[in-house]
Length: 400
Image 1 (cartoon, rainbow, N blue to C red):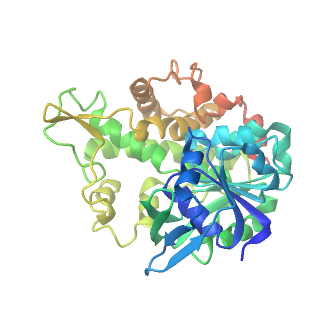
Image 2 (cartoon, rainbow, N blue to C red):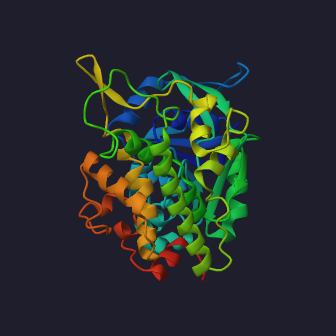
């Protein structure tokens, strides 16, 4: 039996969004929302009068029926929890459309938050944000796939634990206990001290653009096609490792400076890339002596290649792939923008952003400063109107 009093909005229409909808609808009043094209109407038509079938590890099948599948943002008026399982570039649209309808105390959780999700939320909701609770998850809880789009999905595996941070911190216990109740026994939701730690922990913002630059940037690639698509993580060479180490060291400098300007701020979860590998892939790497060896010998990465396009039997890089088009605007730009506010130099991040923005056709950084005309398409604090440390701390709900 579902609890008609407790209402969950699941946003998105991809693998994870459909799994979340199917899972929550077993016990709660669940509404699926998608603003992407006519996805909601297609999903509603595909499901028809049938129940959604979710196959879980071990072969069991859970059946449920969402209360509705819609593109109407006004359903947010009844929501106790709104869960965004959409690409990070779409978060702003959902925040804006839900804002007029949300009731005080609504928990809005993003999976994953990427960088600066809490600040984007505050900027889109304005004064109303003070009555809301934002939760940023570092990643998705499940590996999953469709078996029949809109009707059936399979959970391939569930993570053991998942980090999440809440703004304001005073609402952490309330928000995380409700979200744990939604997710079930696994994964264990572990509280991260603050959303800034989740933002700067974001491994994709360094790994994806860094590995792309290392292989295809002006210092290492002659512009000629390759005979085959190179290995991505397992193909990291000494030069790429140097780029990645430079970027992760610059992010660590940001963390140290933030702990200095805001005594009591705990940035423990915003670890180095190497530490992140040790935390997340323990036991799956044959050699953990260096960052390069962690990536080269990680069994979870076996055979994964660079995103490429085949041209006349050879391979050229896809430089508009999400590794650049998403991870630079919603990841690296946040770190660069915060570094600028803190008056920190970031030479490695700068050269990757400068190259990457040209690949994806955006003007973000001009003469080393976050002043480009496309800043509003990024998570850089400056793109959300934040240019001073005091304004950043206020938007982040961090006390000096």
